[in-house]
Image (cartoon, rainbow, N blue to C red):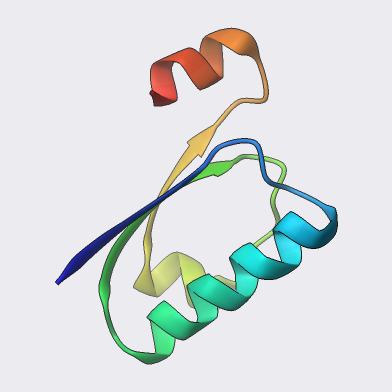
Length: 67
């Protein structure tokens, strides 16, 4: 099963905490996952090697193209 996580505006606070928990769970399940994430969100190297990540600039144009 393929998962798409679309979170181009999440980079801090409670949303960040929930997003990282979700990504960690998908990583441990070895799920096929693509994540559209805010470029300000810091990820460990483990995520970068196991989950395809598309970074989005925190601008109106960046988010428009993410859609």
